Amino acid sequence: MRYLISMVGAMAFALIATIFLSGPLATWVVSGMTFDNPDDVANMHALIFMTGNFVALILGWMVGWVVASRYRD
Image (cartoon, rainbow, N blue to C red; front, side):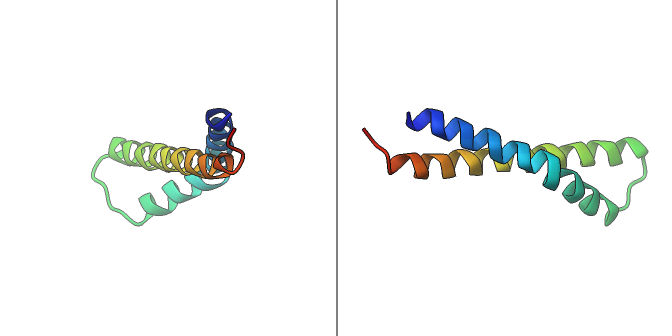
């Protein structure tokens, strides 16, 4: 049951980050940098977007794990 709750928490955090956090964060970080090539802008934007989602996924897993530890069988 602990793994199930952790997976649900990870998916919820990742979904919320994808919708509300990662896009604006990536745009904000990239807007403060200078690039020579437009492809570099897209690559950096995608990297920050995916990193934000990954961090949210890990945080969601950890929160789910802590919450589920209270209901240990």
